[in-house]
Length: 238
Ligand code: BTN
Image 1 (cartoon, rainbow, N blue to C red):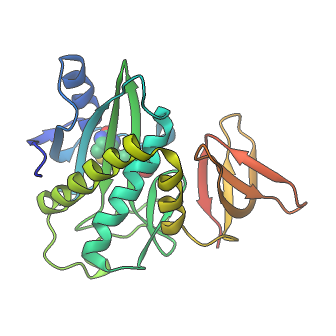
Image 2: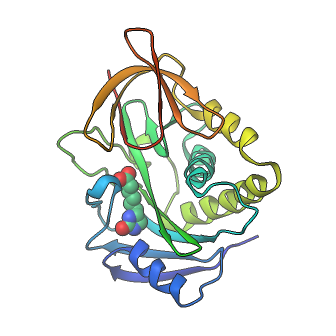
Image 3: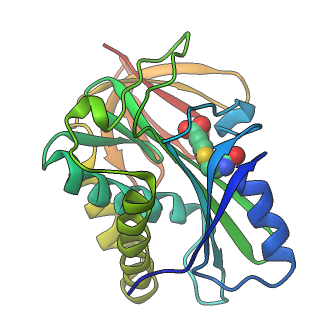
């Protein structure tokens, strides 16, 4: 089923626009896409910048009393975007990094930002399609550089929206366990070296072990201890 998509030319942030739409009663399932953003927001207070031709879009989920915890939507959208983008670049090219970045090797292809307004969770996705922003601290890539043929932002969003609607329905019907398995099957392999910047400023590094039953990240530290990470910024270590 095709999801409804509103298109705007230039805006500050599609997440901010979707928050306003959510407050005005926008129903679950609607998408908003901008051709360019002037104040795009990333995780951890960072900016998200990019050229015309890349994808900037947001949707909203209205949480019900029986829904799984809101933070697990980060895994739902990650799995959906991974599935959709793999249609363009082939299987085995992309991997997920906790909680919801999509990577090709060590280069970031896509980022997602979840924000809450009342009972609505706003999910924003930024996908590098035609160009990869140059960042001081991270390698980036785009679908075009990965050899994706005939992809434009409208078509990529169509595929993402369809996969997301399916993943959301599965999350509601079957809960977290299959979702966590699906996420892990798309993640970098166990043992991958990761660093985590925690919300209190602590920085730790360790080997990726997987996710716990709630979707938190498990790291095995050099001293053999395990740390379960519920929030923070995670980096791949080469
Ligand atoms: C990240 O830091 O990895 C998350 C990036 C999320 C960017 C997208 S672009 C569309 C939506 N609107 C925003 O302002 N941010 C998200």
